[in-house]
Length: 183
Image (cartoon, rainbow, N blue to C red):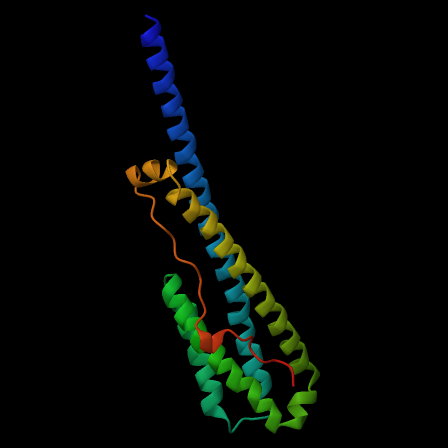
């Protein structure tokens, strides 16, 4: 009788632990999805700002249409990208196009002094900082999630319920520097 009670208590404790571990994985997974959505929200702010930048630059550098079209094309590609990897790839293209756009201002002193352009530069700098912070937060949540599914004995529950490692947001070496917005 005592052995049956001890076995029942052990089984109940294991079940309770499994439920707690499972719920922890679900919460961390949801937190990672929320962090991913936070990155998307910050990127949307950038995407919404790009047409304003292009319109401001158009008045000063209308004959630089290939650069302006490249920025708009890169922005449209980034807006329609699906999945973290595609979004990161599209973001790299947009960052490159924006760098060329900001470089144009060197050739146009009136543009460099335009208050609207300066304000848009400040907005872009703030958005870049927010995107960086959102990516850091996402990576921190992913690290916590990945750690929790890889550590024994919770890894047993993770494998039973098919919780898989999530990928970090990584920036390639060519794009680790911020978009240059100050001259």
